[in-house]
Image (cartoon, rainbow, N blue to C red; front, side, top):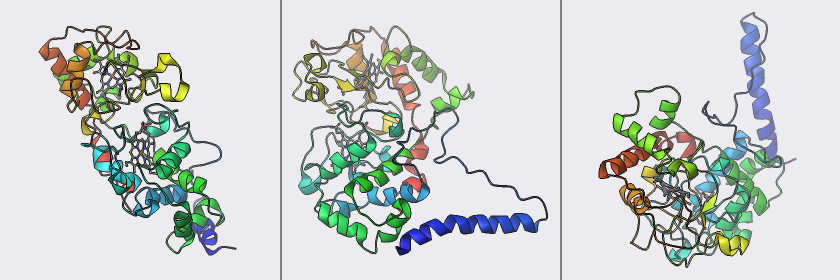
Length: 351
Ligand code: HEC
Ligand code: HEC
């Protein structure tokens, strides 16, 4: 029997035994401790969906965290997931418009933040990955991301560095790349947070938003702007694919690449706006016909102008006629979506 799995299985039992002794030593009836829910989900968020073949366990999440930050997973030993998804930027690659992977290879798209990523059901701007496990595999193998050498990674998993954590996570020492991705995806599912001032407002702290932010919120969720129609719900996204008129010709065809349906040409998944103030530049390409969109002011000005004409542009993106003050209000509201705790939660940082 592998050494690591014994450690992994015995440790929680020993913990319980100690607790039992402590409780009985006090003379009262032993109370069976109820497991705290894992990960900790803010009360106003729904439970994180977890696939049945990859249950969330603390040991596997911790293994996933180590893998997420480990550059040895890339062919050159220079790039980890965290190279492009950094905690201080809400796990985006701000301020880079597109990211550099192994050998400084340039990708095509802007790296999104990963907070509350577990709630999405299609991953990447075009939704081409159906699960976080599949998504991680694509990043891991992608020639402009990590370009992994799977033999080298397997050897690393079998080495002293990971052997024990591996056995504790999976119950045996069989190494597969799928399991590497299962651990990374488990870590990503714990990146759950909703402690922005907007969240606190929703939870009843009515004075936590300034007058300006409240005006911005009303405009954001109004029929006049329609922002909330696409950026609504828990994570300020409807998870649909849409075109917001950034270009009159899309070199990156977006959702079309997945469906081959001409109506999907130039459509991209509506991004969550949580922590959006930390993740500049904006949009799938970080760019538009009028130049890169690096500030929220530029994004709001883009919507106010109605966008560049394009046959698949959504009807809700049209001239809005907002005043400068109203545009500033909407920007102020979006800045209230920042949850600064995401930058320094120790359980999310490099181990
Ligand atoms: C070289 C930079 C780079 C590296 C390394 C990288 N990513 Fe990404 N990541 C990106 C970019 C760029 C995108 C958007 C690409 C697209 O939509 O086609 C992305 C998208 C994602 C998404 C989808 C987000 C969403 O909103 O749909 C997840 C999840 C993710 N990455 C996790 C990872 C994990 C896990 C790793 C390590 C195995 C990793 N990334 C490595 C740059 C990177
Ligand atoms: C028709 C749906 C729709 C409407 C209406 C809409 N958005 Fe968007 N929004 C999107 C989509 C889709 C994207 C990504 C587009 C792309 O990359 O091509 C996006 C991107 C953004 C981004 C960039 C986020 C990032 O991480 O890159 C911001 C900020 C934003 N929208 C704010 C707003 C505001 C403010 C309004 C109202 C004035 C608004 N949106 C109206 C669908 C919409």
